[in-house]
Each structure stands twice: as structure tokens, then as C-alpha cells.
Length: 245
Image 1 (tube, rainbow, N blue to C red):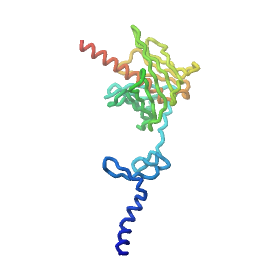
Image 2 (cartoon, one colour; image 1 turned 90 degrees about the vertical axis):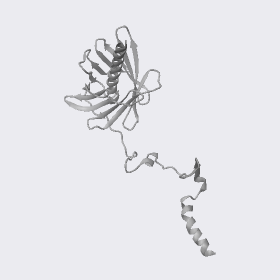
Image 3 (cartoon, rainbow, N blue to C red; image 1 turned 30 degrees about the horizontal axis):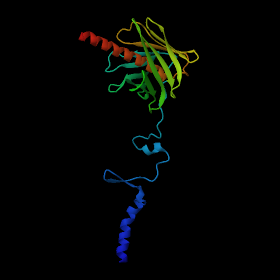
Image 4 (cartoon, rainbow, N blue to C red; image 1 turned 180 degrees about the horizontal axis):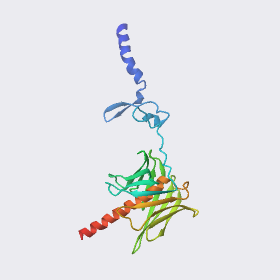
């Protein structure tokens, strides 16, 4: 009898060691699942693995852009695509996502590392574009205001920091072309974003930065990309309506 009891104890011991507290068992849709007693102290460590270790991941820094650079739209591309260049050197590329519920962009540096994404909110009062780093952490956001007249569509932008506080405003200062003067809350000029009235085949923006500390450059470049993309969509809709008439 004692031998039988000893064999039974040895066979049950591994199971008892694996699940020592039956209160940790829970049933989901007829299947029994073991719930660990304690979560890891570091939540990020739970996702660590040989393929991807989020605990060790760090945000890719924004490319160090010169005080004046250009954002050039590519002539041939499946989606709206822009190169960030200065002095013959390429600093990055901004590409509109092909499949997205809203207008969205990816910004990669010259080594093809993702440094920022911009995405228009689906539900918002007016257009609100959130800009995040490569880990999805907020950098800032852009709120667009559109004013229409008989001759022109006038666009203004409010720039917010990562916490949602307004830090800068744009003012259109040239009605012939498109020139946006971005000033901080004290009225000091932060940057200008400008394109000529006539662009052959594609848009070319010139960005001049006077105070790089006020507005993150990753937010700045998204304004030009978003403005061109919206204008292209508006132009295509207008041509489509003409063809339907």
C-alpha cells in the first residue's frame, strides 16, 4: 500500500508544483488557462524576446537639419512622396501611406530609419494631425483651419506640443504664392515655409528655421507634406468633377 501511495505522490508532484494554487486557474470558453500569480515588475520586459526587445528600444532622433532646407515633391510616385534636402545632401523622405483610414505620413532619415509618423484624426472638430516618433510616442500636433474666399483657399495652422499646449501659430503673408510665417506665442518668428506660386510638375518648399528649439523639425516638415497632399487631392477632385460634367 505504501508503495502505491509513493508512486501516486511522485506522479502528482510535478502538477502540484506547476499549479500550487487552484485559485490561479480560470476558465475561458470551456478551456482552463493558468494565470500567473504576479506580473513582471517591468511591463516592457514581458515583450522582450530574441526577435524584438522593446525594453531596449529607443526613439530614433530627428535628423539634424540646417537652418534652411527644401522639401521637394517627387514627380513620379504611387503616393505623395517628398525628399528633404539641403546643399545637395538628402536628409530624409516623407511618404504618404497607401492604405490608411485617414491621411497619414511616414518620415524616414537618410539611412531609411523611421523617425516620425503623422496621422490625421478620424473624429475631430476640424483637421487635427498627430505627430509621433518611431515608438509611437507623441511629439506634437498640428491643427488646420481653412478659410475660403472667392479667389483663394487660405490655410492657417496651430502647432501644439506633446502635451497639447499651443506653442506656435502660422500666418499667411503672401497671397501670390504660399508663404507661412510661424511665430511663437510671444510673436517671435520661429520659421517660414514657402513655395512659389508656379511649380512645374511638383511642389518645392523652402523652409527657413529661425528658432529650432520652439517647434520640433519633425512637426515642421509634416506641415509642408500635408499641405501639398491636401492641395493635390483638392485638385484631383476638381478635375474629376469637370470630367463628370
